[in-house]
Image (cartoon, rainbow, N blue to C red):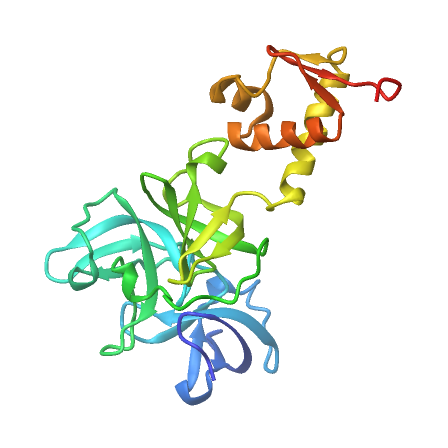
Length: 284
C-alpha cells in the first residue's frame, strides 16, 4: 500500500491514450503520476517507480519523483511563502504544492519570509499532510538506547545559554555545548554529531566530533604537524585566546587544551609559556 507523505516503490498499472500513467496504490487505488515527472513518458506497465505520494490542490493522491525537504515523520527548516487569513501559512518544502502550517499548529505567529523548524505529519482529521511548529508534541522524551560516541543526524533547533538545542535523528532533543564548538551554529543547520551521554531524564548530551580519544587524536596530530612545519615551535599554548586557537586550528579552546594535555603526558611537547615546543625523538 502506498504510504502518504513518504517515498514508495510503486508499480505502473495502466497508461491512457493521452499518456496518463497510473501507479498501484494498494488500498488507495490508482495514483496518477504527472507526465512531467517521467523521462519522456517512457514508463511501461509493470515498471516500478520510486515516488513521493501526497495530495494535490484538489485533494487527490498524486505521485512525484521529486523529494521534499522533509517527509512525514521528519523535521525541516522551512520558509513561509504565503498566508491565508482563514487557515494559516504555507511553507516551501521543495514541491510544486506548498505545505500548510495551520494557525492551530503554530507555536508563534509567522510572517511571509520567516523560517521555522517544523514537523511534517498527516492530519488525523483531514488525512492531509500538514506542518506543525509545536515541536514538543512530536519529540520522543523516553531515554533512547544510544551508546557513547554513536553517530547521529542533527538539526539545530535554537540557542540556549549553554549552547544549542538540536533534534536528534528526527526523534529526540539533545544539547550541543558552546565549549565544544569551534564556531557558532545556525538555526536550521543540519550536521552530523555524536552522543556524549544520555541523561536519566532522556536528554542527550552531544558533541560535534567523535568523543574521547577518537576526538582528541586528530587534533593532536594537527598540532604536531603544525609544529613540524614551523621549526618545532608554535606561539600558541593553553593560555592563548579562544579566538586565536579557533583561527589557527578551527577548534575550541577546551579541545585544544585537551589535545595539548595528551601530547604533554606523552612527552611529545614542552610548554614554553608562551608557546609550545616539539620534543624530538632523541630528546625523549
